[in-house]
Every structure is written in C-alpha cells, then in structure tokens.
Length: 107
Image (cartoon, rainbow, N blue to C red):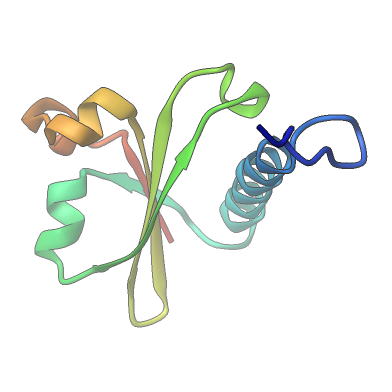
C-alpha cells in the first residue's frame, strides 16, 4: 500500500485541499457580506427562484471541526448562493434542512 502524499505542513494533500477550500469559501463569504447586502434563504426558496446548482463539495477536517458537511454552490445570472448542510441532512434531503432559511447565504 502506498502512503498518502504529504503536503507542506505534513498533512495529506486532500486534507490541505479541503482546508484551503473551506477557508477560501469563508473568506469569500466574509468579503461578500461587506461588499453587498447578503440575505439568508432556504434551499427550496433558492431553487424556486431559478438558481442552478453549480457545485456540491464534501468537506471534513479541522476547518469543519471534523464534522462531515456539504457546501452547495448555486448561481442565477450574477447572483450566487452558498448553502451548508450536515452530511446526513444532505444525503437524506431532509425537508427540515431544505426549508431552513438559515442554511443558505445569497448575494
């Protein structure tokens, strides 16, 4: 068995990628909050407004406090939405999570 490739800080490359991805998403959301008015809406509301899913990313590691989460990125014209779901909620498509207006940040 081949050992995993290690990155600069001794973590696996996959861990470093996930960490970088989550930190980048957090920074982008922080900057977006300052630049534009940001609102929170439910996933179902966003889909109903015609947004399209552009990516679904699984993340687990230090940046997510070792919780398994999915980041769902949606877009409609120049507007972007990022939704956060615990893995079990996304996998089961729980109505409670999909209708929770605090799951998605829209700008």
